[in-house]
Image (cartoon, rainbow, N blue to C red; front, side, top):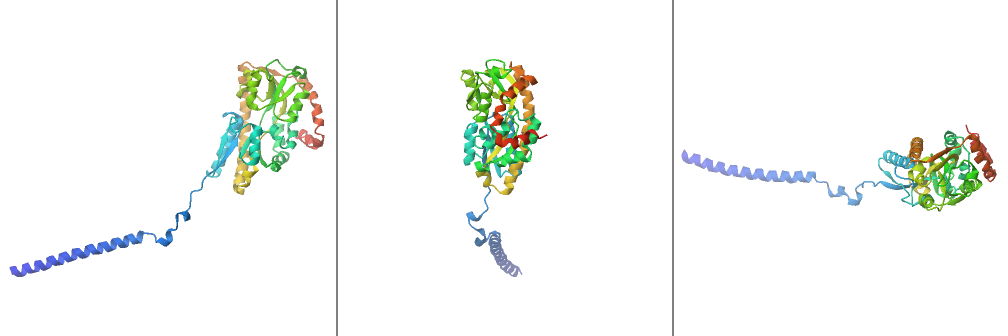
Length: 357
């Protein structure tokens, strides 16, 4: 019995060893099969070039000569923010304030050629490229701020925005540039006679030069960034601009006499390079147009608040603010009437503006 038991155990041991070996071989085969099942067949993998790539954002540049916290620059940033949000980051607009990309005339030229994509500009230098805009800057054309925007937000205003395409630019929206007033380092101004002989900086615009000449002063075109030192050194006696510009440039430090004659309300415009716009889809063009209009509404609100704040700050810093009576202002209006004669061919437009209510 013992021998039989031992013989069966030996046979059983061989059986156990064979079973273990079979199990290992089976496990190996199953593992190989599993790996093969997880792998993607070579014919389905494709090359690296066939794999979808993450779309890169389109980065565009926008120029402005004003400082970082100026109302127009804040609105430019709002414009960029809206565009990036509405395109889910596909289009990013980088805003360059403080004249980093050049003065208004230089940057306008770059916009024409597509070197700069967007710009916020006064229409004074822009009128050098498109003379039709000059009519919007005629002295004492608007009753007040509300009157101006009723004109600019109408079909007439849209026709001026769209009229820049022949200049390789696309007008997008209108910003508020406030009322422009004279300031100087010499004396208080209450009449055109007080301006006689003074050298006044003007924008590079024939209309603005004619305006200053008609009031008896000597117009001196120069870049915006040169005005402070020019007044300080006596190259010029003064300039003309709105309250926020007068304060933000520190011109009040060298020209303390500020006269509220409100001779012009020169609108400002956000425009794009036509070369840039033409590269975008119709959907993205629509987004940019709508974003520009929203940014314009934002800028107008910011401008009004800034104007109130700037006036208070100028008075606090020692500026002498001269507010003209109706009779005194009429003397300025009468002195510039001859300028309107130069725009006889635009009489219908002028009448339409004057009659807008």
